[in-house]
Image 1 (cartoon, rainbow, N blue to C red):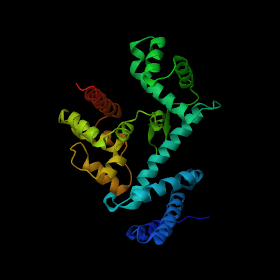
Image 2 (cartoon, helix red, strand yellow):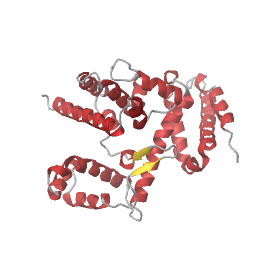
Image 3 (cartoon, helix red, strand yellow):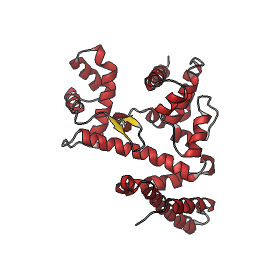
Image 4 (cartoon, rainbow, N blue to C red):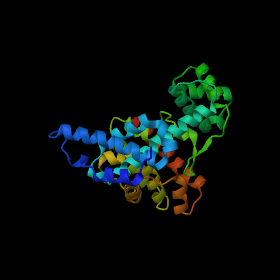
Length: 293
């Protein structure tokens, strides 16, 4: 079957779905919502059928979630959906890459997250202690028996393929960053008792940065928190990059770290160090506030 991209772009943009009142017109709303899911599925197959066709269930889940959460403040619906699908697809690619890396080793999704978290903690602590001390520290941090950490360490040392994956768009990504470690930047926010309380902490740490650091940190933080910022409808925080938000709404995609580095005339390693240092300061400040200091 041939899928016509232009046809489905037109059907999506002309859909009456978001003009309907779901409370007063439930039957019409459900009918158009079902049609929109179908249009979005066909649209993606028209864009990249070979890559996307195996993930029909995931496409429908993302489409349904986007329909539920969308409102006119989020720009063009198709752009909003494209941004959400790109994020979901990157997670799929990362998960598949881990499966390939651990070829023949059957592990659960929870074990994947543990491996990712172990690697992140090991990178932070490995130069400070012996391997046994490292495992003890990580066991305490992850609230796991040392024996379990040692098993995770063995799995993390398997090197069937490299750690870097390349998307069909040519963007290189560290595959471990595509797996939710349970400690990601966004997880901090969404699991907090008060999202706004944490955003205010981010604002205070941001205010302490040197002026030359602020623009690129603003862009990077906005990219990482993009789904949350769309839901909050709160533009009172100075760290939010209006440039990134407007470009994302216009194009339906978020700029990569490589794109930002080029924009600011810096290399990717330098950008990575800047954002890691900011997150380290943020971790410290959150710890201080939680301890009442």
